[in-house]
Length: 207
Image (cartoon, rainbow, N blue to C red; front, side):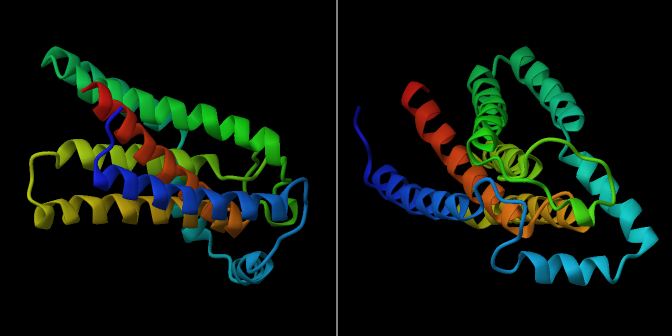
């Protein structure tokens, strides 16, 4: 397997991000308490709840749900396959389904309890890393990549900025609804970014 300089640099960066992720995971493993800035942020939100914002955050959270992403992914894959764009379909399926599966396994490892005192909606399962944020990071960055493969770097930035905004809003919605500690969101973003990049590296080897 021949790795380009860019690929080696990317892997080094992903290793650093992964180390940060796992250090954070060790800090919260099996815990039902917040760490670092968790309580400060959740307390502020909890003391400034707005009914309209709750409805907005529920909608944003839905955009990162399995129902929504699977539906959009199925439409995109069907369209790609019709146009014989099999690489695009493979990458989207690999990155998104893989991110979901890996997130489930990570939750079983860290087994962090959700911030039950702050719940505005019901949510089961473990907390770290945030599944909505991790999968949304992988999914929306992959979409941005596929849409901009043949564009100049300057034009790509717009799509990646849009993807980043969508991901940040997703994370904020999960914090606002009280179903995740802020550090869960950070962990979800870190590992979602790692998985997105690994998917690109692996799929390019077979492209």
